[in-house]
Length: 313
Ligand SMILES: Nc1nc2c(c(=O)[nH]1)N[C@H]1C(S)=C(S)[C@@H](COP(=O)(O)O)O[C@H]1N2
Ligand SMILES: [Mo]
Image 1 (spheres, helix red, strand yellow):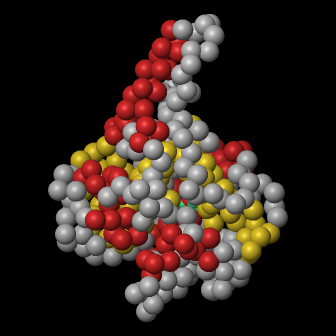
Image 2: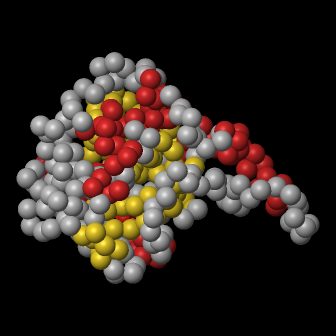
Image 3: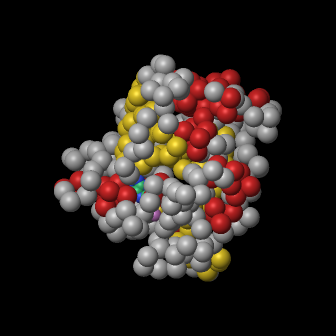
């Protein structure tokens, strides 16, 4: 499919290819062996634990200060662990090893990827993205990850596929929220195939240069920065290519308040509050919310022929 081709804008091959990761790991091992010797002239491509520290893709400038790591990792929404913002405590019980994400449905080569498989085979980069929650707070985070389009190319999308469905792991032994049986578990989200192929659609495996923490959706979560944060399924167990539009978690609970498209628009209020401005996590300042969260130049074209859909909120 034409739109899954690599684009010319992408950062130079040498900075993102799997080879650089392999090299980074070797460099880390070598670095350990050479500990004590002076600078060895190698760029710092990997941490001692093997997690890559790739080049930052400067195409996506957030235009705002990066949120403090402490704020972004202690103020979270992850209802599987509870409904308050302090779920980082119970979330530490999430077992991250082993973990695989199954990619299935209308694909030529269904398979399960471990996070290591992905770190080795996907074009890993860092992107600083804004995240705007539908609750009118926002943050700015340097994520490590890769475009969803790269994973879709790896499995081969079949012609009947129209949507991508994201399913969060449901682990009752460690997720007390699953006992709240009135919620439609597991947490499911989705987008159209065209949205999935947009260059901004990003699968995230790290933040602040480290592997993702459980509260942020370890070991792998999604993010589309022009949509409200609830579209970003955390701790994904399964990604499926499907023909029918998936019914998402929040849509199933309250369709008048949380739609399928959920594009950010300051002029379309939530039924219970204004979306005109947002509270910036960490600083507490209030700033105006932007159409498509400021990413309109990248995604506006996706919706040109969809004016009859309820695109906002
Ligand atoms: N599985 C799952 N994913 C989820 C949620 C959730 O409750 N469960 N909350 C969503 C909401 S409402 C937001 S705003 C973002 C928050 O991501 P963060 O905690 O990393 O900031 O995660 C989204 N992904
Ligand atoms: Mo949210």
